[in-house]
Image (cartoon, rainbow, N blue to C red):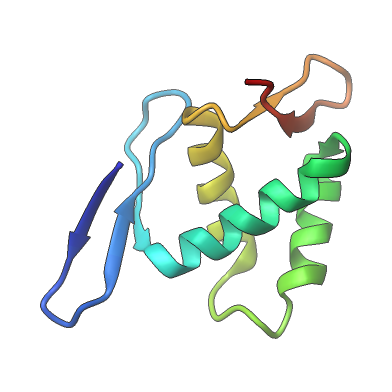
Length: 100
């Protein structure tokens, strides 16, 4: 995980992608907010992409400045690449916490 600090002191994080595509440099605070929300949503059960993003929008609506869908997708892909979460082979595909 690479973190850089800009002169105006906004911490950034370079995300990863599960298919080794280029990551995105995003605000570390926004990253942590979405990471916590995604892991919390998946703690109790497996969710489809639609179910996961409905929960994120419900939980973060009016509390998050930025596009929840864009940041959510970016952080979700990063969590997959870092093996915090995984996709199931079920149809429809679901996401779950990765067993350690």
